[in-house]
Image 1 (cartoon, rainbow, N blue to C red):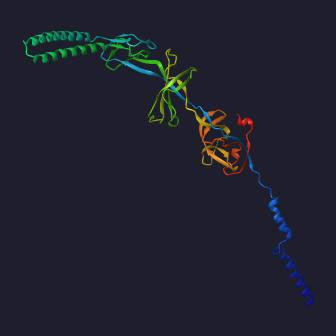
Image 2 (image 1 turned 90 degrees about the vertical axis):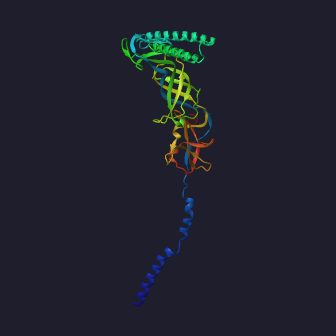
Image 3 (image 1 turned 45 degrees about the horizontal axis):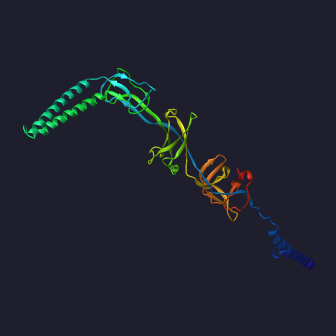
Length: 362
């Protein structure tokens, strides 16, 4: 009985020691396996991207803006005195030259006023000359000369005023142009300031565009420009005016381009596209697809640094050349990622390979 108990206790003790030996005593095989794991684990291969070397080149910029044509001079000819329209010598669409008679108003006794002022002037002139001779001979005191001379000058001024009032009844064109509107007719009563006809000068013609403050740099008076009208006509001109103050409503600056229009072929108020060349700047040409946005929403490109890690570079757009873009902000010789840039992130190690010839030479 005792022998059986001893045997049972011994078996239990042996089993317990055998179980504990697996936790307390490391196996040689396990150590060898643990030592071999690092060498057996596969190394992660860097992501492969296509890159293109950035090359700074001078790029001649061209600023294209949409605007309209506008006559250089436009005026509404108005009456300068009262009277009825007795003659109207123009009609809509008619070409007139400087000093051509546009309309004539009724006399309204203006000729009579001129005749009266002329008679008074002649009287004062005769009195002035006669009395001056008497003063020189000593018959009259010299102090009378001042009074006589003032009366003569007053008569002269009254005659000039009467003649000016008479001339206001004849309305002439201030310069050559085309009559675009005639809002009056013969027999209509006129008062000072009432409209008679609108005169427009079509030569030169202006192309008017508005430019933002960011694009204002580089624009100067005298710069040549190309104009394309919505009708298909093309013309050339030069920048005549660059505004120095912005429009309060749009915060843009007015640009005027002067166009020769001797034949009047370019109408007033038609839509026009104006292209102005700007000074060349150093820029890099990259495929449009290489542009991307950073996590902060900034536009730029991803490049591969010297340590083969991805970097993000913020850029500025210079010009759009359809499938290619001219940008600024990249150092010369930088490796720009042109394929795979959307699958990598900043700081990631990559394997750069040259871009295919079709991409690099596009």
